[in-house]
Amino acid sequence: MRGVALNAVSLVDAVAESLRVDVITGTIEPGAAITEQFVADRFSVARTTAKAAVERLVADGFLQRTIHRSARAPVLTAQDIADLYDTRVLLEAEAIRRLAAQGAAPEEAIKHAVELMVWADRGDHDRMAGCDVAVHRALVDAAGSPRLTRLHSTLMGEAHICMVQVQDRNLLHARVIDGEHRAVFAALEERDPKAAVDAIRSHLHSARDQLLARHETIGQASADGGAESG
Image (cartoon, rainbow, N blue to C red; front, side, top):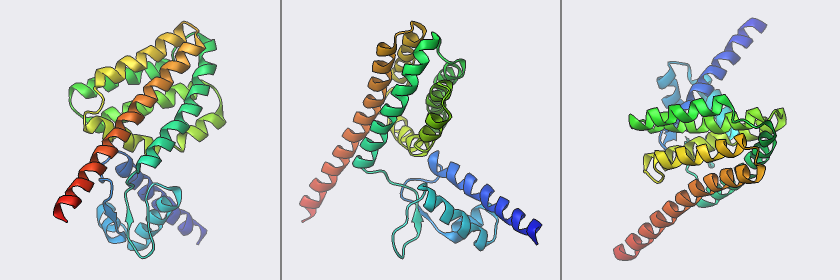
């Protein structure tokens, strides 16, 4: 019986992880309803397994649910975006400050920055976002603090969703993103903690401000439409 229970748990884990990836990469669009039947059909599993996977992602914040409603892929508000990026600045600035003492940019971060431009040339926004996430993960990981890495990782699901929105709507050109990444790398190689922290802060604030401006524009358009229809 214990073996059966372990197998059941591992199947739930697998479905939850696959569903989580679909959400953060934008394969499932923000706001889309995630019903138990949808998950069961998508992954060819029993509804009990689908239900457990959905509930896990709701508990972890990758899906949202209101009372008596189906779970949905997150739709991030302006307040959510501002808080997410401001928190990232705190964590990534500390990681960058520690890295500056090493006098080198992490090879893993540089590799993903190069890959980002490859996917940009192919117009694949999901892969671009994945590389962008990987650049920032590599920078934080290289700081050598497991706790800093763990805290940072809890933000990167929502961050991936935001990055897809930035790139899918051409809010920031890929070459601008690449230039900002390389400004961080250059400051690290020069062992200049102030310049490195300033560069990562400017980079994150730029993405934040573009997303917030987009939200404001959409909100104003909705308000104008409502006024006209009234």
